Image (cartoon, rainbow, N blue to C red; front, side, top):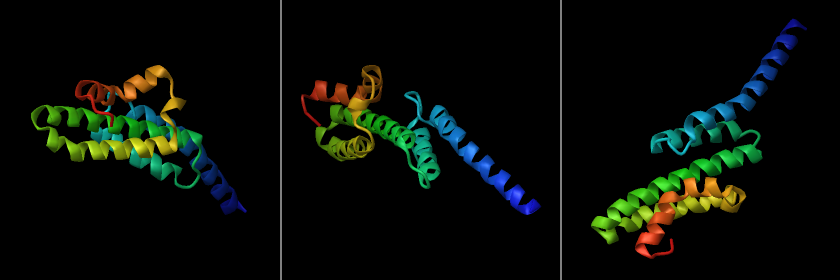
Length: 134
């Protein structure tokens, strides 16, 4: 009986920790100022945490990380495009892939205008400056 009680308390603490961890992961790794590596790490942690019980908060965290990663790729593509437009194509392909994955989890329209502007700043700049619709 004592072992059962200990296991129950342990299981409840894990459940409580998971609920807190998503918020902690988001605030630590998935921010507009996060580096690409931090975003990738945060995405991995969210996917691991949400593998068992995915829910809307998990999808929003994953989508946010993917939109921010997508924006990093657009920023890199923009820099490369200025030197050699042809070399930017593989980077743009990756950016489009990340955007599609993010959009499948949570449509960009689900975010506020300010969040959209932050998450897609480089994409919008690239499209505006190169006159290409990617």
